[in-house]
Length: 337
Ligand code: NAI
Image (cartoon, rainbow, N blue to C red):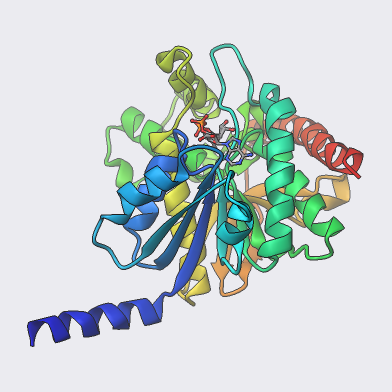
C-alpha cells in the first residue's frame, strides 16, 4: 500500500518534468559537482555524463543517490559514446577543457579549448540539434561564437538555444556586495552585463540600492573584485585550477533556469551571454544581459537599462575587447572548414 503511494508520487513528478540533460566534461573539477547538483534537480530525469576519462565511475557513484533520475556514463573509448550521450537530449552543458593556472588569462586557454569545444559542438549539432547548449568552457566570449558557427555550418543553428554561462559573475557580485554592505547575500542582486572575462564583465552597481551610498573607492574596488574574482581562486588554488565548486553551483542554477523556462514557468530571468540584438549594429554579435527564458529557450533579451557615466566608459572598453574575442572564435571555426 505504502509502496504504491510512493510509486504514484514518483511517476507524477517525472511526468511533469521529464528532461534529458547531458554534461560533456563531466568528470572534471566543475563537471563532477555540477553533475551532482543536476542529480538533485527534480526537473532532470535522464542524466548523461560524458568525459574522456572516468565517466562510468562518476556516473555509477552519482547514480546511487535516490532521486528521480537515471544516470548513465559514456566514455570516449566506447563506440558511439559521445553520440549516445547526446542522442535526443534537451540540454547540453559543456565544462570540458583546461582551466587557468596562476598568471593566465581566460584567453590563454583558447588554443586548447577552442578545438575541444568545436569537436563537442559538432557532435551536439549532429545528435542533439534541438537541445539548448550551455557553454562553460573558457574563454566563453569566444567559445560561444564557435558553437554558433558549428551549428550554422550544420544548418541547425537556433540562436534561442545557445547560452554562455556567466552566472558565476552574478553570484560573485551578490556575495561581494553583501560583504561590503553587511547584508544577506541571498537578498542581493546585481545586474552583470557584457562578457565573461576581466574588463568585459560589467557589474551595474548604479542600478543597485547602493548607487548613492558606496564611495568611489568602494565602488572601484567592488567592480574590480567582481571582474577579477576568478583570479582570487586561481591564485589560492596555486596551480590546482580555477573556480569549480562555485562554478558548479552557478552552472546548476542556470541550467535550472533554462529547464524552468522549458517547463513554462513565468518570469524566469537570468543574465547570459547570448546571440543578442543589443549591439549588433556595432558589430557585436554576442552580449550578456538579462534574458527571460521560456519554452523555446530565449524568450526576451532585455537591454541593460540606464547606466552611469563611469559604467558607459566600462561598456566602451568591454565592447572593444568583446568584438575581438568574438571575431577570434568565428575565425577559428571558419579555419576548420
Ligand atoms: P578540469 O580540467 O578539472 O576538467 C575538465 C574536464 O574536461 C576533464 O575531466 C577532462 O577530462 C574533460 N575533457 C577534456 N577534453 C574533453 C573532451 N574532448 N571531451 C570531453 N571531456 C573532455 O577543468 P575545470 O576546472 O572543470 O574547468 C573546465 C572549464 O571551465 C575550463 O575551460 C575553465 O576555464 C572553465 N570555467 C568556466 C567558468 C565560467 O564561469 N564559465 C568558471 C570556471 C571555469
